[in-house]
Image 1 (cartoon, rainbow, N blue to C red):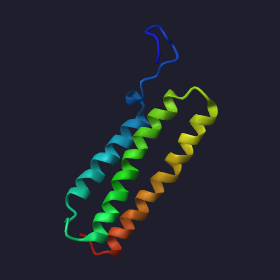
Image 2: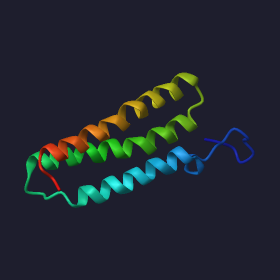
Image 3: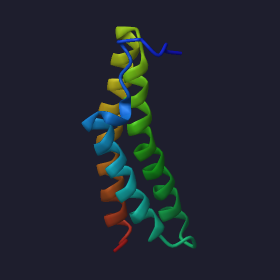
Length: 99
């Protein structure tokens, strides 16, 4: 993809936003590990939370590697949409009396 001497290459793992997304994923994974598997509503919420948490770092990496401005902005829009959805799922856990 990139040549060794390519000056445009940025390793997304070095970016603070990528690192924050990884931290968020780790916290969400720990929360999801606590969700009992016998509750279908909580299991559904768990799957959405994990999907959203994974999307954050993937889209940061995609935006970093994208050459076209349009692709970068598309990934940024997905990140902007995904982050608040995690908060919605947090409220869903509270609504379902998950402690």
